[in-house]
Image 1 (cartoon, each protein chain N blue to C red):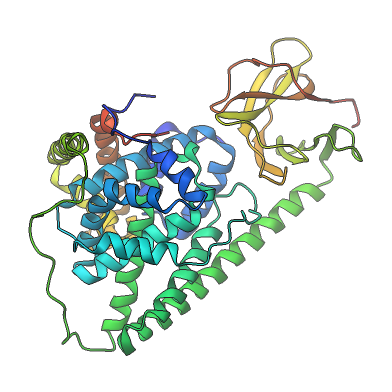
Image 2 (image 1 turned 120 degrees about the vertical axis):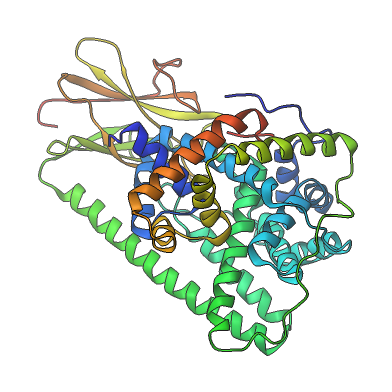
Length: 263
Length: 201
């Protein structure tokens, strides 16, 4: 997806401030999933957002607030298990679950009828948000399914199924010239490292594509990866790179998938 | 990316979060000492009431405690992560209150937030100096924006308004608001890059 730099700046800044309309935010999240550059922009504007907190003036909290923070936080029952996350992880599930827990914990704090009313309303709002988030997710899944079932899609496999080694499927939609990467049994990359996809032309140097990482379960999916046009491609490969990606491979590819005629 | 100016003495923020993920309560206490008063100030500015702001801060740190195992350094600093959670909790609270106020009266208002801080929660002089330097940089960067740029950013940041809501509120075209917000945020970013919190992506 090509977004002019000015638009990207504007979208990333507004997204970091939470000022996009819900539909715009969803569309932008799809871009974030496939664009390290967009993710970097958002991350930087979030740092600006953190500094803006210092422009809020100063107010003294009660001296006992620290004790109450510690008490509240550590008395929660925390499941120290990472839930399976869908897609890129930019989906609002974790925040949503957290807000439901927050609402539930407020209900227990006994701040009276006024508070309970607030809680109910917050719960309803959260459920409404949850519904629209699920509808959006469903629409996205349908779109993914359609893109996979498109007769123009070629499937390229890397790795050997049935072994404990990583297996990666590349779904290449020749009509839109976009690719979807689906990985299994791919151990998450080391700290500050990521996996990078490369397109290997018949003649010439490897062309860098997206970087991504897998979830702790070894699963990864990256959608809408643009495939270079105007060049005859021989293969795709995966390497382990520094997390921002590299302009050319710095390690030997650990998986290669050849693009044979009629794959 | 640019190195942040100086660093807070003691363990890095990200190490504190790692320790929190393993259930270390002392690490949570240290993180509160570092960021508690800034987050409290932003919560106060959004919710306007002391008790509500304290509630927001308690919820934000509770969420940080729960989500510590999923904290992803690649997405930015611990300060940015906690600021987002605090703003989001505070804006949720204001939204649920404004719904509530349409159906109940507001007779039982709590006392408004007090003025300047008399006591801060920061433990080390080094942290206070660094924080003061940052605070001055932020004030200067905000002062360098045009009034309409600052207004657009503040309506999003403190009132949780979307760009079209801001356009409606100010009776300005949406495109104008988008441009103001983009230019203002770009200026802030240029001015504040040397002052990012430790661990910025």
